Structure formats: structure tokens, C-alpha cells
Length: 444
Image (cartoon, rainbow, N blue to C red):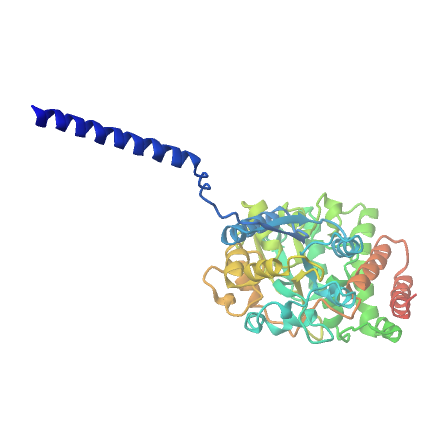
């Protein structure tokens, strides 16, 4: 009995002790500072702006796709895509003056010397490896090489002029093959207009760069304008002859024909309610245009029922008596010299222009022709582009004829357009072109 009472007393003490310890523990935990919540790593995004022009809705959609792929691979970099539809390079230069230039932007080969001279470009060869640069075709890099030997832009792709022709309209006109010479081009255009009621050929009013293959194919020397004396190029007999022929394409093919109450055999895109040559050709308002590889994805996307091989085809640019010549166009991705995010800009350029980006954008999406070596044999290369690479030319002339090619191109094209509209004579146009070169390089 005494043992039982002692056990009860001991148990009560133990329970009391446990309660005291529990109370102390609760109090201690209550007095402890709260543990910080689990930390999560916050990735700070870098934002860069990318500006380009567009050859239509197709090009914009393709770039939106490739930008999305880039942002998935680099979630810490966001890209704002801006499309400038008119006077692209002039607007970009103005944005530098206002301090709001994009981080990465298109740079046409003809404008590269101007931007380099103004110090607007970050030397890409200072921020990407030489091994990366070595992937590109040398002739496409050359326009973007500065006087210091550095590379100031990397070509995103390239295109060449070729003849696009409507096979159905050719068949209606009784024509079985594309024209081989410039004379045949004009002759075919007349035949098509007379037999189908559709203009045979569309050209731009002006278009000095589109005229250039004609001049060179007739034996004119390659132009290079960086001195007032270079204006003598327009005195060359081949230049005078071909300039007269080219301007007369429109004067005789459009203006005179309409005065005679006949279907014009040469028109501008605007004459048939189109915005540009690709639109005029895709709507089947004209039978022939001379344009570049950029037109191919536009036709496939915007006019899917107008089939390559069945309804339309491509052929080399017509030849002259001396040579067969085409123009090559390349556009670089350049980096703003004052970008606050050069590393992010360089990653974007490398992704778009490297094998991964070009296989997707240029090859699979059929954008144009790849600017890095080896992809021309990719099994995903569109047959239209592959066929264009099979054409043989004596000269493939890069769109660059001096340190102020971009400005000069615009001014001379405007003069040509004035002559085509009968505002000035052809002789007055040639004199105005010479004066333009002389004044530009005298600083006038």
C-alpha cells in the first residue's frame, strides 16, 4: 500500500516535470525569431530592341517565330521587334541623333560605309569569335569590313536578282521558254500584252540597282563613286545606251502605249494596284518581274494556290551582248555602338545568324539564301532557292559602289523616275546624275 502511494507520487512528479519542460519549450520557440521564407532565384531580364524592315507579312511572321525560339533558349533576354516600313536607314540614323537607336538592326551593304564612318556600329569582330566569323562567305563579309579591318556587321542572308515568269500567261501568249536577252525581254512583254491583255513586265520607277545588270552586261565598267571625277561613268557609251533603253521601257511600254489606246506592256506595281513587285506578280497582274529570293517565301505564304513549277517559274536575269550579270544583295545584323547590353545583343546576333538560326529561318522557312557555308546543300533547302543557285553568271555584283552608295542610289533612282514620268528628258537625267555625283563628293 505504501509502495502504491509512492508510485503515484513519483508519477505525478514526472508528469508535472514534463509539463514544465513543455511550457518552457513552447515559450522558447515563441521567443525565437521566425525563420526566413525559402528564397527563390529571380532572373533579371535584359531587354534589347531589334529593328528591321519587311518584305511583307511573311518576313515579319518568320522573324517573330525565330525571336520566340531565341527567348526560349535565353529566358533572361527579351527582344522587342520593331518594323520600320519606309526610309529605314535614314530613320535609323535619325534615331542615333535622338539617342533612341535600337540595339540591333538591319544594315544594307550599300549603307554600311556611312554607318561605319559615323561611328554608329559596334565592331562585331570584337565581341564574337573569329571561328564564328569564318563561317560566312567572304564576299558577303566584305561590305561590312571597316577601314580598320574590323567587321561591323554579319550578313544575315543574301539574295540575287532573277527573272520570275508566269507560265500560264506565257502559254496563252504562245511563248515556250523565258527570254534569254534584254531585247527578248521587251519583245516578250509586248507579245504578252497584245495576246493576253495583261502587262508583260513590271519594273520600279527608278531603280538604279535594277538597271545595273543591264549596263554591266553591255560592257559598262563596274561603277565606284568616291570622287567628283567618277561622275564620268555616266559618259560611258554603254551607260548612255542602256540608260536610254531602260527609261524607255516605261516611256514606250506604258505612256506611249496608253496614248495609243493599247494595253501597256511595261508597268510599275502601283499601276496595277500593287504595293511592290511580289504583290503584282502574285496577283497575276503582270507576267514577268525581276526580283530576288525574298519574293519566294512571300509568294508561297500569300498566294499558296499560285504554284511554283506549275503556275510560275524562275530563270536567270537576261544577258547582254557582253555578259550575263546579276545583282547580289546582302543585309547584316549590326549592333549599336552605344548599346547598354552588348553581350545580350551579341547572343541574339549569334543565334539568328549561326547554324541553328539560319537552318530554321533561312533554310526551313525558305527566307532567302544562307550566308554561312555548307547550308546550300541542306536537304531542307527550298527547290526554288536551290534552282536559283544553279544559274550561271559572268558577274555577281554586290550592291555597293562607293562609300555613299545608299544615299547615291536613292538620288539617282529619283532622277530616273522623273525621266520615266516625262518630267525631264533622258539627256537631262544623265546630266543630273553626273551633277549629283560631283556635288556629293565635293560636299555640296
